[in-house]
Amino acid sequence: MKRSIPLGRRLRAARGQIIMATVWLAAATVSGALLLTQDTTSHHGAVASTRTHHVRVPMSGRIASINVTPHQRVEAGEVLASIEVPGIHQQIAAAEAEVRSLEAQIGADEADRGRRFARDLEGARASWLSARVNLERDRTSLAGAEMELARAGSPGVLMAAGEIERLTVVRDAARAAIDARTTEVTALERNYGEARDRAGVAQGDVLTAAIEAATVKLESLRAVAEANVLRAPASGVVTAPVGAVARDGRTDVIDEIFPVAGQWAQAGVPVLMITEPATQDAVVFVDIQRARALAPGAAVSLRAGGGQRYAATVRAVGVAVEPVPLRQLRDQTIAEWGVPVTLQVLDQALTPGEALSVEF
Image (cartoon, rainbow, N blue to C red; front, side, top):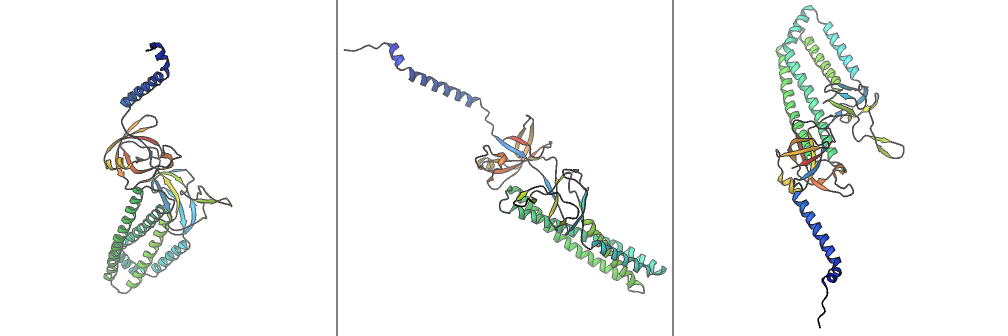
C-alpha cells in the first residue's frame, strides 16, 4: 500500500536544504559578478626613495666651526663647517715667512729675472698643483665609497642590491680616476722639473728656484686647508649622520648627534648628512615572476594617496630576492620577500618616503 505525501510536507521537510542551496547559489552568483567586474590590473605598493649625501672629513682634526643648524635648508656649495687640522695654520705661517724671506734676498735685477722665470714656470706649476689637489680629492672620494660599501655589507644592514651595485660602480670609478690622476701628476711634475732646468742655474737662479719651491709648498698647504672646509655636495636639509650612537649610561640609544665646535673628527667619517627634499625614484618589491617579466624602460603608472597619477618607467630591476621593508609589508606581522624594482617618475618630483600605488 503506497502512501502519498503531500508536496507541502515535502517542501517543509527539505526547507533547510533549500535555504542552504539558495544561499550557496546567491554567494556563487555574487562571487562570479565580482570576478567579472574587478580590475584585473596588478597593484603594488611603492615608496619614494630618500637620497642622502654624507659629508665626510678629509683629514683628522677638530671641528673649528659649524655654520648650520639641524634641519636647516642649504644650497649646493654652501659652507657647512670647517676642520682645523693640527699644525696646519702654523705650517702655512712658516711657509709664508719663508717665501717673504727668500724674496727679500733678491735684488732688483734678480727680482726681475725671478719674475721672468716665474712666468715661465707658472703654467707648469699651476697645472701640477691643480692635479695634486684633484688627486687628493679623488682619494677622499674613494675612501668614502669604500666606507659606504663596507657599511652596506655589515651584518644587520639591509640594502637593495641595486644600491650596492651603484656603490661598487662609484668605488671602481674612483679607483680609475685615481690611477688617471696619478699618471697626470707624474707627467706634470716631470714637465715642471724640466721647466726649472731650462731656467738655468746662473747667479741668482738657485735663489729663485728656492722661492718657487717654497711657493709651491705654501700653496699646497693652503689647498689642504681649503679642502678641510666642508661644503654641501647638494641642495637639501642638514641632519646628523644616520646611526649616530648616544649613550644614556646603561644602553646604546640610536639618536641624532649633531656635531659641535671643538669635537674631534676622524678622517673619512661622515659628520653631517644632506637629505634632498625631492626625488624622482621610487622602489617597489615584486615577486620573481613579475620581476622576470620587467625590463628597464618598461612603462608603469603610479598613483599617489590623493589620487594623482604619474607616468613612470622601470629604471632598474634587482638581481636577488630581498626582505621587504616593514613599511611595505601588507601585514606587518608576516615577513615577506621580493625583488626590488626602482622606478623613475617622469616630469614629477616626489616627496621622499611618499607612499604610492604601482600599476603594471
